[in-house]
Amino acid sequence: MHITVMGTGYVGLVVGAGLADFGLIVTCVDIDKDKIKSLAEGKVPIYEPGLQELVRRNVERGRLSFSADIKHSIQNSLVVFVAVGTDARPDGLADLSQIWSAADLIAESMEEYKVVVVKSSVPVGTAASLNARIRQSLSSRSPGTGPSEFDVVSNPEFLREGSAVEDFFHPNRIVIGTASERAVAIAKDIYRPLYLIETPFVFTTWESAELTKYAANAFLAVKVSFVNELANLCDAVGPSADVHVIAHSLGLDRRIGPKFLHPGPGFGGYCFPKDTRALVQAARSYGEEFRTVEAAVAVNDRQFQRVVDKVRKGLESLEGKVVAVLGLSFKMNTDDVRESRSLKICEALLAENCSLRLFDPAAMAQARRVLKDDRVTFCSDSDEAVEGSDAVVIGTEWNEFRNLDLRRVKEHMRGDLLVDARNIFDIAKAKSVGFRYYGIGRGGDEQKAPALLDPVSRAIANAPVDEEPESEAERLAVAESKVWFERHGGQGIPHEEVLADFGLASKDLRKQKG
Ligand SMILES: NC(=O)c1ccc[n+]([C@@H]2O[C@H](COP(=O)([O-])OP(=O)(O)OC[C@H]3O[C@@H](n4cnc5c(N)ncnc54)[C@H](O)[C@@H]3O)[C@@H](O)[C@H]2O)c1
Image 1 (cartoon, rainbow, N blue to C red):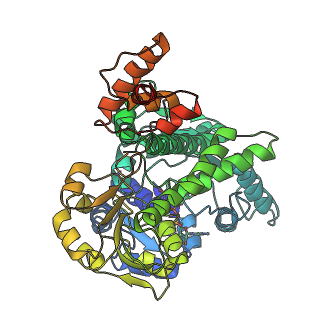
Image 2: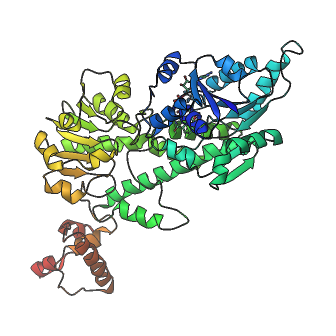
Image 3: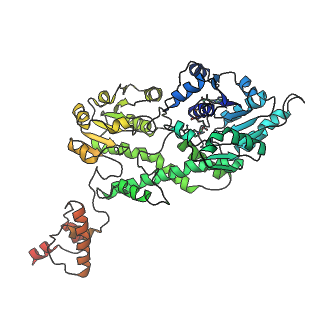
């Protein structure tokens, strides 16, 4: 079977190479001629573990090729996968211009029956519109010059950048949205190797398939924002509240599950930010609200600022400070910086007049295109980046940062602040080499007042513990406070004044006053 994949981005290239590995004959096409040229020369333009090898193997075996002649490729294929971009418009709606131009190219090129498979993430209703658009285009041709039959399938992609190849071959499910039995049979043929490893298949309508994709991303985004708000609360409660312990405990509940419960600077990347917004907007266009997702977006929009706040707090002022940021991609194992929270942190630090020293294992070229500022130094490794810096921020959780020699990092710095926006370090270790460590929701950065106790209890917590309480209420408060007191390593707030505010006095004071 011959297949054309339109779009050779993070999805199209993995899908094209993956389908070729299934034994299908695949041509990947793109309107970006430079991309096609470099792919044809054997250069894979993105960093994705395992992709280079997958592409090389299938090109060598003659199953995978690259072409800028889109029309010719479509004409030679039974199936056309559409994996073009669906960026966000300023109003949050999905920009479907790449989808429509792909649809027009398909319609123009069509000479016989085709299956058009929409891989791109699109709002509900897109497959129906695409179907109508192609039909309209075909009907405007002179009679007898084109096919009357084609099918549109919604087949959303769920792969994750950084593990895209692994995800393609071991998906959690394949969703096929179409009413056409003929298209279902062809889709089953295409994905036969996955059938053999018992991948669940869901056969459904266009609309359900489209909504499944947005719903999956939105649900995960809600989970991320939830744990980030939980982490922020832990920061406020103080060192005894550790978001990792709570998240671990939450994740052991099988109804919740352990994934996507890692706090950080918020979700980024190409998909979550735009797909959550597009879902909210899609709901509005149907006269509905999607408030959980709206809240997740709002929380995410300000979460990276928490990291900036921590740097500001740690350095007292950001003006003129030198900050090293390690990790620029939106997550580890990718060079993709689209909507990267780390870059947002960089931009915010620049806005407050910091100088930045940056390093990322894979995303330097992409970051250079975004951060064009004289105050930015792009460094060749983390040693160079931390040199002379007042603070180090961990922007992306790359494995190589987890194993940094923190003692050496500290020695090369001018300052002693470590803002670990990905919580990759052991707090005690970081502190033992002289860092002031600020994480996310681990209580390492600041000791706060025991907000759970009322002021009277707080004051009593600091009273000598061997005194006899005068009332049952006081006895209970002392008992509760003792627990808090011990958990916090005996630290508390000596507040005669607090008691005084309540018309009370500590026993010492009462004794003094006779
Ligand atoms: N990146 C991900 O992790 C991921 C995961 C699942 C789904 N998706 C969805 O898949 C789609 C593609 O994402 P991506 O990250 O690969 O995007 P991308 O921007 O990396 O790639 C899109 C490619 O399509 C090409 N293109 C645009 N119009 C074209 C046309 N008419 N004909 C041929 N090529 C054309 C562009 O030149 C570009 O190379 C999006 O809808 C995205 O939401 C992405």
